[in-house]
Image (tube, rainbow, N blue to C red):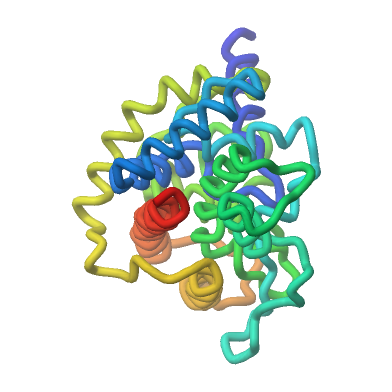
Length: 304
């Protein structure tokens, strides 16, 4: 009974919905990569702002863990649900961006950046919260299925993947879908016909997630080092701004996530194979490093 209760709490802590992106550890990896590439001036600025955020909210986030905040609060508010993603059409040739006023991840990144620059204000987001939200949002739009949707499938949430296995899907089988796979693709392996985990995300309790985040920080440092050894910045684009990052994710989502599916882009359900899982894992790891480096560049500009 105790084991079941712990598993249920651990699963609830990593709450997933149609708008979730990288799991908590994935967001921590983005934060760890970014922290290692901040200038001293930017580091001082963000640490001051984060301290103010913690004081106002009674929390104890670090730079590495603050990217988890937007998911940690999702059981308390739905206010930011559409801020996590941007729905673009399943057509590489089409102009992919919706009208400018639509509230989505691109809009949110621009808003938070402008708040820090003193170019805009928002009654619900001050400069300190804007920093914390940027950490999450920049990570989100580097997950290819956060910028891509095909046949109205909500970014792969409606594409069933029966051969995903982990502790979470044992409790909630409806998470066996393509979107959830890509949320965790950076640590997925293919064994005996199943899409398993190379390592598990550290579990934590949703009602009190900070201890679990803190305990996972040494692992985030270790994994970040390994990622940056194999996914060096000179091998892929580092710069650009939010719109180009979204366009990049959109293209990768259509080509790598959908067109390479066993059975074709419209397959549903679809059992993933070795080639697909291996390709997705390496691409996801690259995207985590890119997100971290680009977030650092953005903060070096905003706080420089």
